[in-house]
Each structure stands twice: as structure tokens, then as C-alpha cells.
Image (cartoon, rainbow, N blue to C red; front, side, top):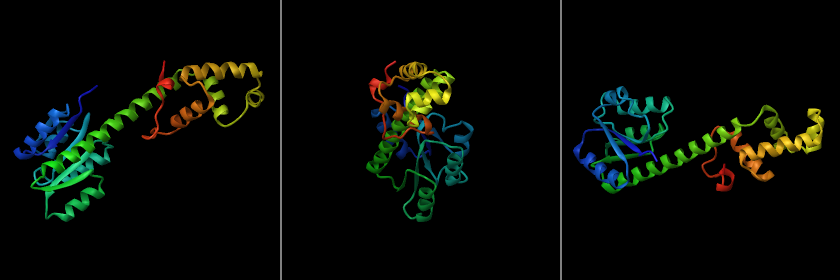
Length: 217
């Protein structure tokens, strides 16, 4: 499994010391940047589980950095650090999609709680990406006719109805259906319908899983 990375746009030694110890215990790596400009120049968001931005130390505008990351489709959780008195910044950061906003001086328990939530979300996103990859790979093994037959099956049509629609005999439909289900690793109609519904969505639901039986090659 790839080691999760946490990127920190900050050079506060107190925050960095907290993170170094916590991330070591959680098996994570740490990358630090002194400014938002340095972070962007180094493509710091790449393969990063969490990005921690100190808006008071991140350069021209820490919130602008957050906005640019969100605009580019960055999926990493973002934690913003700011002063206790800066309510306006906190509200703007939350509205822009920050996972959490922590006031300074940072309470270690609050920082670690936010970090753990970010890592949990990263693990879930990784699971969803792996599931999506599995679905796309298996669909790619189907022939055009097999996919056509399955689309009819999922629409609720019987084998004889599909045969009439496609101008073939019913045994041919049964053959294509059987081969397609074998390629997808499903054994029943409910499993097939669930698989195809996931395939029709851009992202499989985080609350849905394909069983080990369905994922068996």
C-alpha cells in the first residue's frame, strides 16, 4: 500500500513537531513548504492525503491557494490554520470546502483529530478509486454484444424479449449473458444489477461494496 503523504504549507516548528510525531505513528510521510508559491511550483498536491495550510504564513493568500486547489479538482482534505480572532477567514475557508479550521495556538488534540479524519477520508477515496478501476477493467473485457445484452437484462427484459429485439434465438442471448456475467464475476441477477448500477455512476457509492465473491477473478 502506498504511504499516505501530508503536505504542510507552514514553517511553524511547533506545528511541524506535532505532525512529525503523529504521522510517524500513523505510517504517513510529511512534506513541508514555506509558502503557497513553493507548494504550487512543486506540485505539492500530488498523491497527498491531506494539505494543511497556515493562512498567516502561506504567502500572498492562503485562501487563494485553497481556492486554486479546489478549482483544479484536488481531492485532498484541506485543514486551515489561522488565528482565533479571524472569524471571517474561518467562515470563508469552511464555505470553500475546508475539512476543518483550527485556531492558533493549535491544540494538539484538535490537530490530531482533524488529521485522523482526513486520513480516514483518504482511505475511503482510495477504496472507491480501486473499486471504480475494477469495474472499468471488467467492463472493458466485454464484447459489444455482451454489453448490449446486459443493458437489456438490467432494463428488466426477459431473454426471449431480448432475442426478439436483437433478432437472434434465445439460446444465443443466454450464452452472451452467461459469458458476460462470468467476466464481471457476478453469479446472480441482483449482483449483476448492482454491478451495472455502480458502473453507470461516475463514483461508486462509498457506502456500497462489491463482495469478495464478486471481485474474485
